[in-house]
Length: 513
Image 1 (cartoon, helix red, strand yellow):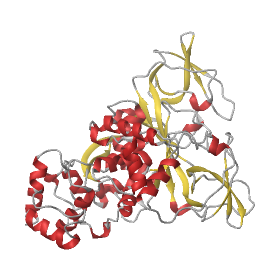
Image 2 (image 1 turned 90 degrees about the vertical axis):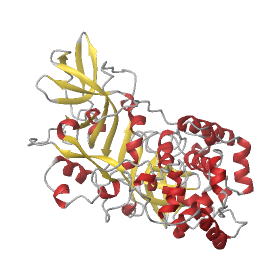
Image 3 (image 1 turned 90 degrees about the horizontal axis):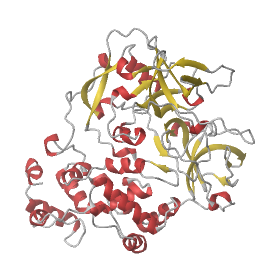
Image 4 (image 1 turned 135 degrees about the horizontal axis):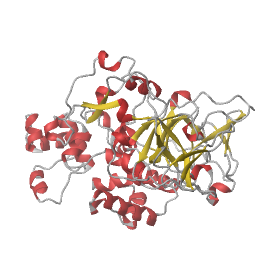
């Protein structure tokens, strides 16, 4: 901290004096002149109010000051993906550090045509480490990302519990005409019971009805925008196949419930209470979940007792310890910016300058400048992939283990399937990339399980081509079971002679029409 302040020619005494002048000595923003002594004790960290004051006085960003004190805001997004959720939540993907470095790829030379199915390692190679901001399109669209809950999966089996979906806010006007059939697209809808992704029917006069596919959810009519907001259309899904759970219909959503006006302004305590109830959590459930967060982050300070969580809601006071704020945002699906707003912290006054890398634990980029036009244009595979998926979900780079059930994921585990014109499984119809667990090489096919629970495998044929399908072993032969609308016979191959099983597909990235 002393080195960072020295870079701005500031002493702690000067910072303390400025904080007293800006906020007053009795304010939670005040920074005492003996702060170094408290930090050396090892059990003290500045509060979010004091971090905000440091940011404003020094000019460095709040996120960078938090990293100085060993907090990474991207942990919130990662935990929102990892933690089980009964209800759909909108992920806070704004916390990705644009100044952080990430591995980037280049086209392999010599590849003339892109096959229908192929390992990404055959098409791409790891090139350099780039700053994330150099890979972002400044004028590009800004998408929302949501995680589907286990109790409000109205679009099942089009969407599965635990799937991550991309939502295009610019397509919100694709609502069907009045008294028209069901919408061809799925919408992300916010109402007083939470969020859900489903198709809708326009009943006229600003009234919509939420429609389910196969499950028995109550048919409720909602007035827009008082009782419901359409946040956009769902156009992409990241589906986790391994460990997918069957959806449930809770009583409060299975019976007719009375819509309420969406809140426009609320205090910090009311925000906590509403979001906790939206997620179907009791205070004790939330306390147990905070214990899980403490285990994942290996720090007991992230755990919160039921009494503490109740106090935050009833007393309308934020926890002084920032560890608890991270837990609250992760458990309840809160956006960090919304929490800062409720805490009366003006983010507009915070610093905007990126702190130098040598003060932080950033991945050092090999190239710090923007990518030139020569690097991002051309007919290569990278450009084709980015054209089909223009928004890069950088927040997923820290969640790949969640999708693969493996701590180690490499480029060799990803397969391109975007050019397969006759897929053998409906989930692969508009898929671009699949993630394969190459340790699962024993193909299984379950006669009594529905389509969404059948494992899918990637198989290497003798001629070097690949296929992706459900398959099983019968009498020593590998039998491929095509799940297509058109009739197609099962295919048989001699296992280990004609074909080899590469592994089981555990996740799919696919477009939704």
